[in-house]
Length: 334
Image 1 (cartoon, rainbow, N blue to C red):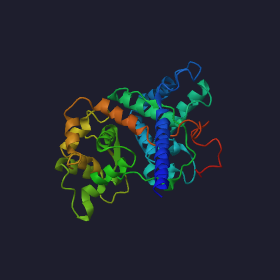
Image 2: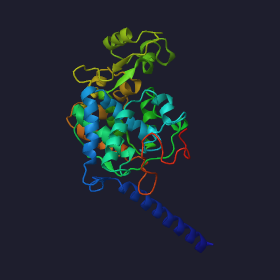
Image 3: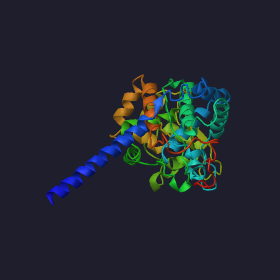
Image 4: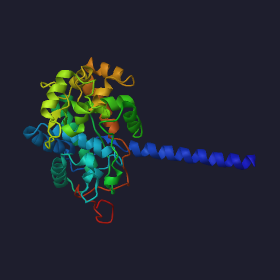
């Protein structure tokens, strides 16, 4: 009996090592410069950058949209471009994704890349590159993106389970942990809000009836409260938007101003403000607010986000068009 149990244990250990090694190989397949010499000497990353830069020159707010697009893609099924798939019940149709923008930028970049080398570059990689370029164009520095992702087949609205803006810090920490991201990663990635906006509907409860108290959120700066009430009228049908970084000189710049604002109790979303108040995260917030290395650390966190549950090697496919799988309608995005 002991020999049999030992044999079973040895087999389980060996299987575990094989699975660990397989997982490492999958992630190791992502690498900086993956497309070098794979596109007939064409600069794939340069092609994507040009598409993003053309749009950014016309509309700098596209930067926040592309960063958000990358986050929403990676948090559901991993970074597999499933958010790009069209369909009546695809991820695009889920409530948190109905205000996502930037699909047209990805499509434009994909079209240009396909002209250079057909069927080589994944839509998932284009999303990751475009997000990096958006950060760089907003003054956040240009970090190196690992590429080699492949595109997924499944996109269902029912799979969309994103952290809510009204989550507590501990709830958010748990949600990020499920993706292999630690609390510091979470605080850094939420710093993407430094170039973002939010619609009134996402924080209106903080202005009028916070947690069903009948009162505003007492943690909000009073001058900000008055300003937001003038923009987000109670019971108004209009769903206007405001900058998440309340420093008007910095609301389109990728810097640490967002953290300075939430320390001053000028956070817009509940989760943003709680980052500066909760003992789990306030030390990290204070450190970022008083240092000059936010762009570099944000880039590192984005690289880590971009490796969440990726498809590599023979997994998935390289889509011909980002909105539809090559085998449509045989896979789930309808």
